[in-house]
Length: 269
Image (cartoon, rainbow, N blue to C red; front, side):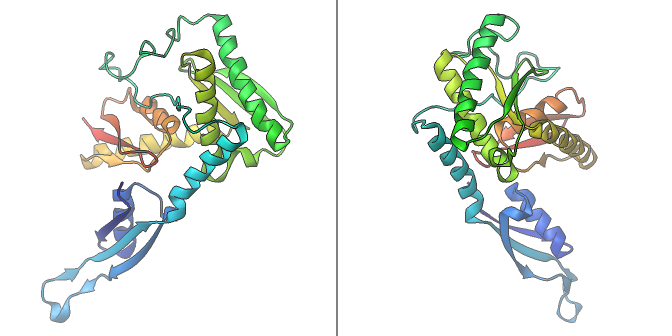
């Protein structure tokens, strides 16, 4: 896991951007120092100096993610050995229908287009029950609205009241809740069916922003003829980018790195 990088550029902001891109994070996740200012070398020998900036991850950046998961686990009283059941973020492209995960993999249960209404209801009931336990612990009264997503997933949107505590900073608490609800549902059912937990449409708004980020990354990769790495994202967020770009004939996408720094790479064809 890379925690430090040195970036170079024609200016300090350009050098900082280069270092942030190498680490795959936003500026609020790091501290940095200017190693060398840009300018002319002594007596003009050797031409112009480039700016160099050293960047390193803040310890709280990783701590926040772990703390959000710990809080959600404590609330639900789920033991540490409960496996997560996040939806695989890789998706097959239109030109490669045989690639990527399928719903027929071991432990995944029936394919999404074959699951019965009764089974869908059971999946939703188990997930709603887990969410209700969290709401009770927080003393929150709210409604849970159910939708079917474009990829056949069940979307459960918690609405009503002051629900910011369920989202957390940058959605980290919501991500932890998502992971735990998926894990509990999978454990109860014996197989996995994708369930997305949302709060007041937060993920829907986030989805639109991620799709815009993905499209802009595709434009940049095509224009520069080089891969573009996005900042680290959750499995759910990475999947949104993959789906958004899977029919784009100009680029391909892949995920690389280890959690919590796993990121999408957009590559020109």
